[in-house]
Image 1 (cartoon, rainbow, N blue to C red):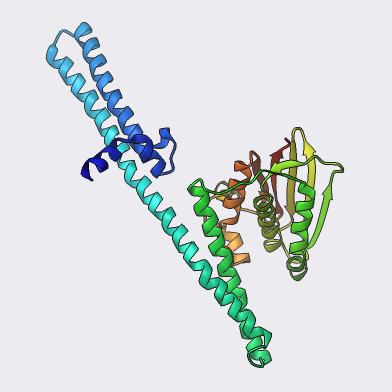
Image 2 (cartoon, rainbow, N blue to C red; image 1 turned 90 degrees about the vertical axis):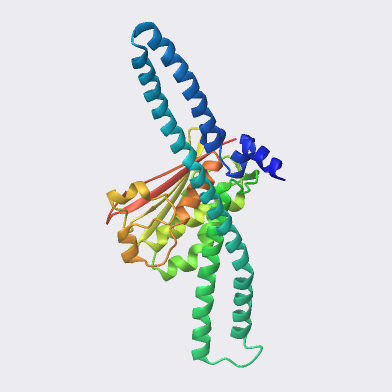
Length: 314
């Protein structure tokens, strides 16, 4: 048992897989590299010092000084293992909690729908109003749990991406149809334009639909009253180019560099719309990049934002 654990400690490839890191990001491998650097640096320093410096004490002092500096760097590198372990445990915790929450939330949603249907007993208008509030909050929690689960899979490199031929125009139209009620309730007009006879692309339809949903949801959610959201799809070089343009609150210049980070929401957005987890754009960027595409945006506070992504034509 003990010998097996010791062997696992020296199995660098296994340790790197444990933390879901590449070899050059793995603390154990970097520590090994630093150890080799220390040995070679010590030998080279001693050889050069002995050749050009007559005082052997000065040579020894220089060798010890360089060795000490490299050793300190190696110790710091080794300390990253604790950070990697903490990150792994955090990802596992989020994944386990998200899975465990899905079942009770689904049951809660089913019970609320059953009570609202009136099949058990008659429901007054006041009770129906309360049930609607419960349903909205349970749906919001379910969306948050799903986002956390997706983020956990992305961090662990376990987000499944299918490879299917997709007509991106149809996928965008489906997203627009799903958002029609939300847009109408927000007094937002949506316009979609697409070039004709666009080629198909290869990707995961459900994940790419999620990216379009996230971009469109943000555009509607943070647009001004009686606003407008424009969607454009066209071919650009060897890619399909898609953008969502709005005349919403925009993103402050100082916040733009953080916009794709997890849980980040700019200050003006919080004042305009209190709901939101700050995970949508992080998930969107991860899916687009894993699909071989690129994503970006331009924005001006008080004027609006344009989010875009490209996907390769194969």
